[in-house]
Image (tube, rainbow, N blue to C red; front, side, top):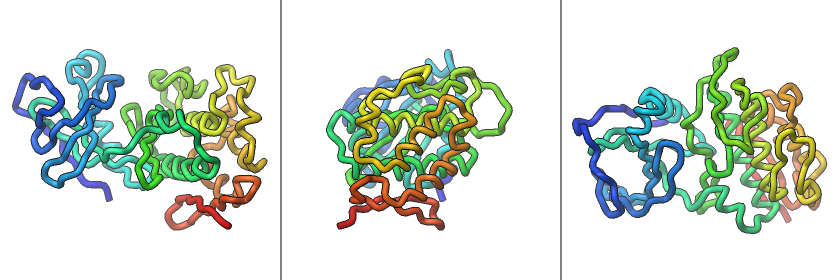
Length: 294
């Protein structure tokens, strides 16, 4: 079970400026890793347990102007209910010295970074199995991610890949319109019109997988498939068909959710034509694993 987290407002009205080398309670900031939306991410050292972590620190001034503290609480509470090897776990969330701090394990790089280097087909299949499993689990918990893209997958040294950044996530209740939030280039057509659903997440993940294997992604209106010959090189026809179905522009022609996508993937025993990788589904944990065979 995920740890129970409490969100408490600090006593400091004005957060003190952050700089590399400074301390936030037990965390010492090591370096600034990136900035996006309304938050900055730092690599930090937990001085109590003596390990590196990632700190996501929202800009509360921007939140006050453009968003809501309720959105931050929603993100924390959604992540607190998710406990799966394919999803980046939230370890802590609280106010420290006037800053709202969310603490996560520190990965080695994002999938976006990893895709700048050559990736073997067997490694890609290993990642795909984990990515699909994580999305299936989130959908089983009635959670829409709404911002699936390479930057939001974090890689670790043991070849684990985890879905992160649930800042736009919502509990799916059906039949509602929301703002067209997401990332252009990975957003499903219906999501761009304010009608996201499980099939929208499937579409976004399908585009991420397409890019992993083809090196580029189709663009709206998705009537051509650049890099398709490269994508299908070495892949079984079943896996190619699965990817094409996941990114169909018509929502009704896609997999209904991550669970259906995972079930379809688990039925493909040999995803590569040379059968160097066996893809096996496990019923109890609803997770997939890939392994090399002789």
